[in-house]
Image 1 (cartoon, helix red, strand yellow):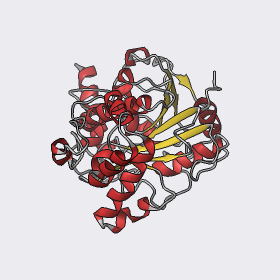
Image 2 (image 1 turned 180 degrees about the horizontal axis):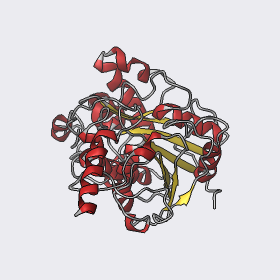
Image 3 (image 1 turned 45 degrees about the vertical axis):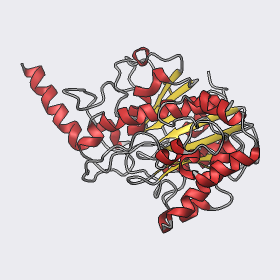
Image 4 (image 1 turned 30 degrees about the vertical axis):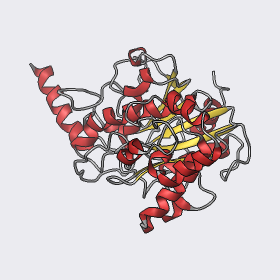
Length: 355
C-alpha cells in the first residue's frame, strides 16, 4: 500500500513537472492536428491530370511516388500551382516539387510569422498552417545525401517558433544546423552531400507544463505522423534516417519506433519513451540515450500510472540503451552546443561511424 501511495505521488508530480524545451511554465491543452492536409477535397475532385489523384488520406508514400513518376513536368507544375498545400505535405512526392509548393503555400498565408520560411534559400519539406502550424525544414541536399538525420523536438515548438531567436544550437532549426555543421556540411542550401538534416515539427507539441506534456495523447498522434514521414523519405530514395528525439519528442519516437526504418534512435533529455526497456521498443534501430548533469528532466519521476508519465529512464542501465557522453552539456537544451561531447557523438551517429 505504501508503494502504491508513492506511485500516486510520483504520477501527480509528473503532471506538474514533465515538459519540453521551454521549462517551467503552465500548460494549455492542445488539440492534435491530424488527417490529410488542407485542400484535400479540391485535390480529390481534380481530374486535370487525366486520372484520379492519390488520396492523401489513404495512398501510401510509395503509391504517391509512383503516381508522380508517371506525370510529365507540365502536369506536375500545374498540380503544384493548383494544390500547394497538398503537394507540399504529400509524403512520397518529389522533393523539389514539395519545396516549391510550400514556398507558394507559405506566401499565400500572408502571415508575417511565417514570412521567413518563403525565402528562396529555405527548403521547406512540409508546411501546415492549421492550429499553431507545423513545418519540416531540410538542411543540406536531401536528394543526394548518403546519410539523413531527423530532429524530433519537444514542447513549445511550432511553425512560427522552430527557427526563432534563441541560444545558439537550441530549438529545432538550431539543432539541425549544429548537427549539419558538425558532420562537415554547410548549413545553407545543398552544399556538401554527405549528411542532410531535417528539423521536423510535424506534430502538435505540448505547450508549457501541464497534462499534455505528462500524458501520451499528443505523442501518439505525432508518432503516426512521424512514421508516415519516414516512409515518405524511403519512397523518394533517401537513406534510412537517424532520429534525434529531444524531451517530449523522445516520447513520440518511442511510440513510432517499431513503425519506422530508422537505423538509430537517440533520446536526449528524455522523460521516458513509453517502454520499459530498449528491447520493448521493438525496433531494429540502435537505441541511444543522453542526459546532461544539469538537465532538469532528471527531476521528472520515471513512472507511468493511469496514462500519466512516460516510464523508464532511457539513460538507466536497466533500460539498455547505448549511452551518449554528455558530461559537459548545460541545461535541458544544450545537447547540440558546439564543442560538446554530445554533439561530437551525435555527428558520429549521424554519419554511421559510431559503435
